[in-house]
Structures are given as C-alpha cells and as structure tokens.
Length: 417
Image (cartoon, rainbow, N blue to C red; front, side, top):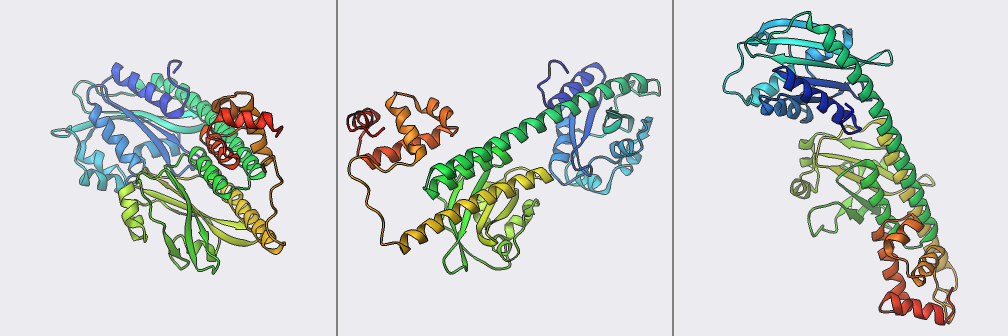
C-alpha cells in the first residue's frame, strides 16, 4: 500500500496483485461508490491475467453488476467461505445480468474448473462496510478454509481504510480543481468581451473538471426555433458540420421546453440521435446535457460526451449545472451589450493613439513589454497557455504589429501603459 499511487483503484490493484502472487486464484476487490447501488471492481490473477481482465471488463462494460457473492458479503457484513462449489452451482449463485454476460462472452480459458473455492470478507473503514475482498480459485490443492478468514480480514480492513482515505483525498482535490475552474471562468467573463473566447474557455474547463472526452455548446437562434452550434472541443473529427437542430421533443431540443439536466448512459441509445453518424465515428458511449438559463430564459444547451461508461454523481451534475449557468450569464451579457450598442447612436470610435484594451488585455500587454513568456503570463493571469496565446494574437492584430518585439516597441514609444 505504501508503494501504491494515492488513489482507490491503485490501492486495490496493489493489494489484489500482491495477494495473487502469494496465493493462486482470481482475487477481486469491490469498493462501494458514492452511489451505494454501484461498486468499483479491481481483479488480479498472477497465473492467468486474462481471467482477471475478463472480470474487470465485465463490470466496466455496464452490462453486469457486482457479483451476488460480493454484494451479499457487503450487505450482511459476514465473511463467506465455500471450500468447494460445483461450477454449475457457482454460476447459479450469480445475478441474472452476470450470467447473461457469461453466456454472451466466453471465459478466456479452455474449460472452466469443475469446482470453485470461494473466500470473501467485508472491507471496513471507520465502523462501516465499504466493500469486499476475496479470492475465487479452481486450482487443485488451493482450497480455502475457515482458518483463512482471520488473516484475510486483517488485510481487507487495512485495504478498506486506505482506499477510503484515498477517496476522501481525491474528492478534496477534485472540489478544489472545480472551484479554481469556476474562478478562472469568472475572470475571463469579467475581463474579456469576446464571447467566442469565453465559450471556448468554459468548454476547456468542462473537459478538465468533469473528466469527459468532448463537449459543445448550442445557442438558440433569434426565432427561438433552432439550436446552432457555437463552440466545440474534444472531437476527433477534423471537420465538425455546423449543425442546426430543431427545438422539439428530441434531445437536446426538449431540454429547453423544460430546463433540466438529462443523461444518456446507454451507448445504444445514442443511435437514435440526429447526429448518430458523428457519435458512431467518435465512439461516444454516454451523453449528458444541461440547459443554459439566465434570467429565467433558456438560451442554449451545454452537451458533454464520454467514450467510456458514465455514472455521474450528484456533485458531478451540480458542477455541470454551474458551468452551464456561467455560460448562460456570459451569453446573456453579450446579448445585452449588443442590444445597448444598437440602441445608442452607433459604435464609439476608438480614441486616437492607444488601442482600446480591456483590463485583462492591458495586463497581458504589460507583461509582454517586460518580456514575460506565455507560460509565465498564463500563471500570472490564471489562464491556460492556449488562452493567453489567443489574447496575444488578438492584441497583435488590433495594433497592427507583426511580432511581440514590435508590439513592445510601439507600446513603450507611444506610452500605452
């Protein structure tokens, strides 16, 4: 455990791998997620790694739940010791979805063992049961007995405490990252009038904070009947069509009629979308969308996609809603600014001499004059290097400079700072 990386899966992997080297069999650790209806499963088998991979793939596929044996141990809090069970009887002990998976996906062995030995004990942490640890063995001479419960229980309890501590640490880090992401978005909204840049920064934070593979933003047109793609990131396709989707009973349009977060976690359901060819090309397996609502008015939809199974918890959903709210506020502010400008006598002409720069651009220009690199500027203004590079390019175009040196010379000579 001391040598393992600080993460629940890493700790479970280290323990099951070590145990499988000490004693033959397939070692399986099951850790309860925040949603107690689901568990994470890590398996190891030193002599037959394909069998362990089969167990992990079965549970990560979303087609099969945790084994009935592990859940029975978790729910009762009592160890299970079965020295020898006929293979057919062992299969009958499993849940229906697990048996269906076994029938549809052959085991990576020439022939199953005639009998299976089972030893599973609960994992404890802070007085509660957090999972189960056990071994399933069919090798001759490697049967389990009641005498094995005591030493395995000691290991399981240490494993449960370590995994629980690692989960608490991971939760704290993730919450800090998400707070930082919201702060960065707030700074961009306050410092830049460029809606396109703001939306791109929001999507960058969506990818990083929600750990999804791709995201996009659709905005409602002036007639309020069509959603038009405004920004996207994370797609493998080099050319994404400018989709225009009707606001109807299908996703994502139906979210606007009754604003709510909606998830599609079954990959087969994505084939019913209008963009099913794109989703198939991208390999998406799960989808989630949140409406962009500001001042009780929906202005668009934020969509996220994953290429693996998605099981969002309440905190994940809340962060998605927060990101959608920030995007809605930015869009509403840009729309209001545009209306005010049209209502005035016309756009104001920039004053002669110094270019019109907002506070963020002026700060970046000041750092450029000092010879600061993009990486150091990014750290100073709390933005990504790609965002800083975009700002620098915008400033160069605005003042008509061809490079940073010419820009610094102009700013110094004409007293822009």
